[in-house]
Amino acid sequence: MKPTDTSTSTVINPDGPQIECGKTGVTAHQDITYSSPTVSGKKLDLKLDLQVPKTTGKKPLVVYITGGGFVMADKSANLGQRTYVAEQGYAVASIQYRTTTTGSTYKDGVADVKASIRYLRAHADEFGIDTSKVAVWGQSAGGYLAAMAGATNGTKQFDSGDNLDQSSDVQAVVDEFGAGDLAKVADDFDSETKATYMAPGSFINAYVFGPDSTKTVEADPAANKAADPATYLGPDSAPFILLQGDNDHIISPSQSLILLNALKAKGVEGTRYVVKGANHGDMSFLGDLKAGVPWSTQKVMGTITGFLDKKLGN
Picture 1 (cartoon, rainbow, N blue to C red):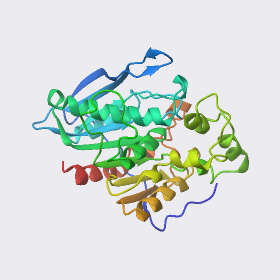
Picture 2 (cartoon, rainbow, N blue to C red):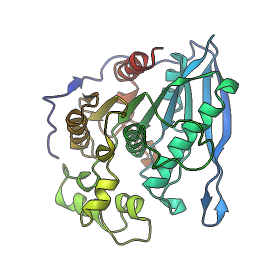
Picture 3 (cartoon, one colour):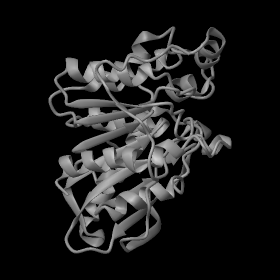
């Protein structure tokens, strides 16, 4: 694997203690239907779980977007990290979104993220949410969708469904080991791996063109550009932090560097953190429980909550 350039990034050595939960009470709301899009002629109820700390005042909102290779979106994932963020004073929602298993594409996934934000703004009084302070936090496929949501502030291109009187704009983006320029997502890997990623019907191409398409992002630069968060960056885009391991074997570490450079070119605030020695942090769905350990350290999670505190004023 190609080594990643860290000259414009901050390197984190993920040593030291793990995060701990249980210091602040949290109220959990389960299986809230936030949107019901039509899929294959039938309504699909998309649900979210919400954790709200038992403290006074309205809470800034963090919408967590799980990974899953664009194939699955298990909103119950990563409970420990989500609970930790909630205990720092945030209402944390974890959302289900459409994937290739429902014949859906990235356009649907971005629409779902935005629908969840609009729903929670519409029900802010019910859950004690401060509607002026909203962040998206995604990992892997969720990191990609978080980047798309934050880049497209100020546009209505991906807004559809209910609560359209509410804004889907966000004030901060936390993108952990997410994809960006999909045609280059395997550029740091060997030629065989890259060929697998770029093959017709791969998890990348299926989420851009649909599961039954034979098109590829390499052969269709216009489609790749339309699916790239960097394409939408502008004055209204939210500030970003990008976090990625320098030993990521699922998403090329150069993906976060490409997006960092695009943020700088468009005048959007962005900082890239490289976690030393860390692999892809969302590998539990593949049976690798150890890959997530560096990502749940106080150092890494403190970087995330510190950024949220700064941008959401918590």
